[in-house]
Length: 628
Image: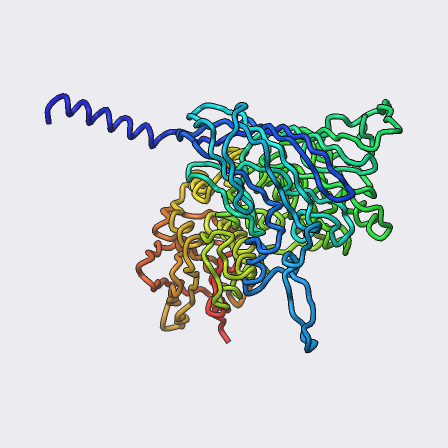
């Protein structure tokens, strides 16, 4: 190789290495929106100005917007999906009877009339004042830009929009089952996310979301009798009143005016949601770190006591989340009666508010948890729903156990049982399945909420509780206001503990492999035999380190720990009051393992594999050996 070629080769190698080592980046959007709501026909008009900053190394010639409201129309993908999935969500269905009196289920969306559907229509689209080409494809707006957005450059995109709020079916809509007039989730043209994987312009089929971080400045003009709660901070509190005012100097309202304009700003979020009703009660209580906790709920005597009782509980829970994961970074959070079930949004949640106090608390605890796992650590929910739902379920169960009078040794026990039932059903799909691609809603729900939760609870078994909690805190501090991936939580756990965990993420999240270990044989020590011989076997494909507890007839105990060779790690003794012996490691390729327990003065009563119950063994009946 001549010198010139050598120099060129070195230069290309340096450039290639530099390109591969570039740091994390994410796009940025700044929304300014003005919207006017007609509460008589549930239609609204608005203007949007969006400053889009391209922090990628790509030149962008197209951008994409989500038009979520368009899903609530007969024949939409959401409608078709509800009619073709094996176990449709009951909220999408209505029950009727055929000519013979037989009960049949029909899609609610398919029955919507023109004045009941949802829609979002775009006009007057311009880029830096120049018209751009737009194409509406169901719930996506495809935009061919007037000029490319170069790396590191910003552009201003403006548009007009008009929409209609659909009859409430899923999350957003009007006049929900509890009488809330407006649940305004997914109501505006929302820029799709572009990241290191490319564009994420998924159609809306009732699953989850992925949004671009940015600042929102939103003005909502509505009938003056309505009270609004939602994302962000209300800028004109004294003008609005309704319990928002900060002092006694309320701006006198024009008695002739029929509307009020509410002005909200929401910094550094990736969505903006609001709800409105004429009969909201509005309470504000101080939470941890002086955060204002807002509670907006119907003036219904049957539920007021529950909503009042909820308030001190949520102060305690927010404090627990702050200490377990990291401090909530905003200065307000709103619990708003609206929507259906419960759904997390930036700085607020929409939840059903009737029913029992326990049901209300359970929903509120879960949705508040999403502030950490989705609205601060902003996962791609569409591709990895198990991260936000599962991790939220994990801290939810910890919090519910914390506020319970009677504490459970294993607060995740029911989740392990639910996961095993899914495995036994034969309908499990890998966690790497896109949220929209699950064959059944049940498989999606158990995978996302339950198996996702077990990823963390089982990490307690693998690394120890202390390392797992340290992992959560470091993960939060390093990835807040970013879009972390499954690999990021794995690498964080590795950095905290020093263990190798690639096998765990691969097997648990990308395959249908299961954990199944068993006590194969036990030969008890006698007068002639001085050691008890214990044979173990690995039946499932997923490897694990193994904890063994030996109990003796005199009430004493001792434990044995078998490290997993591919982890290159030794866990701290989870029960330091019990003597532990660390045995030689167990290599995955060998399905069998043998060790001996020296004879002691008393007899062995019981041998238990994984006494904590934190290993998701799908057949636990062979994990215990008892001397009869």
